[in-house]
Length: 147
Image 1 (spheres, helix red, strand yellow):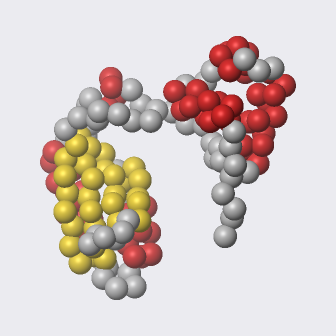
Image 2 (image 1 turned 135 degrees about the vertical axis):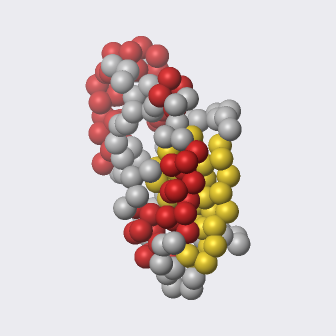
């Protein structure tokens, strides 16, 4: 089992800045954090090497997301079928993320569709995947915080 990474306050502040805007320049990060550009480069290299920073991505804005309908589907799998279900979900491009969870359900899949008809069809497809016992879906009405 990998050991937990130890981050200092500067690492935490750097990660927070990157979460807010991963396109900030090294010079901007250096100025905001009050450390040299060399230290920023070193910290980023270490965070990447240790697997703390796995990549840099785009966070979609409201102009794009407003045209989509999103939902989460909680999925209960049949015994010993979770891996098959996860693989089936991963093949569906409208599935944005898959999370293993504890409790009555085994998986939460985050879904994104063009409209309610497409979302309904997607939920039906998911329900027919081999190894699924039952699902419960909830449409996301508004996102109040997304880090």
